[in-house]
Image (cartoon, rainbow over all chains, first blue to last red):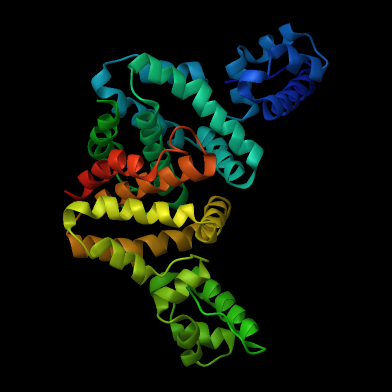
Length: 189
Length: 189
């Protein structure tokens, strides 16, 4: 999670940096945008961007209003036995969608991605560049298989938490994991 | 697909019926709403509702702006060997999302479901009452499994057609079916 400012003026500076980041990532893409360019557009020192947000991928997650730290998510996915990757990804998604503090920004993201081409492009680059490439390298799994796996987890969020279709909406977490995790795991094996 | 009027006044009558249907389904739910009640609210004869839209489930699909005839979708899913249900559902979804004429209203539906609680409630009832119950009965598959299957197909529409993440966005249809259909089929078997 990004830090919030305490002194007067910090909130404005933080918002200026995020607005500049959305412009730079939107115009140049994830690979083309730089911390230096974002700092220049916001009229601040690049060190301040690092101070507020951390790495480039953390600036990107904050600009997308993603309520997660990409490095922490990758650690959950990659730290553990290979034969339970599917279960770890599913339990992580369920825990993020279950809590209102993370569900609300995820829901806002689904809305903006389905209504706004720039938001969709940023989300696409976030998944491709920040998450997918690293998981594919670390596990040696083809990216098409990983995108199919992510599709399934995203669809469960839609059906369970957004549309609320029964019985998947009120199935217990362990019952859902017992049914779906082995299916996800097939994309890894 | 619903028929469009040719004589003056038909378009307005059709829209009045749809507005009444959205109110009646929204307030009373799918089971509680009736063609008679919709006709009364729209100030027309019930026979005219049937004439324009057909059955109650077809009025419901039109009120949701669903670009499909539920009976035709059910026929595609249920008419054929049980061991290729997963493939038939996936190919049907891909064909509906591939064509702009059906993709555009589906995209509008994703937007309204993620921004509007009444649209989400109608979509939920449509899936539960019109589609899920009949497929579960016909195939003898538990509903939790079918909702997991639908989740996966919905998520593929999100990743491939809305967010556009590579390589799933430009994978060939046959390559995608070869990878995903056996996974979907596991929920049926």
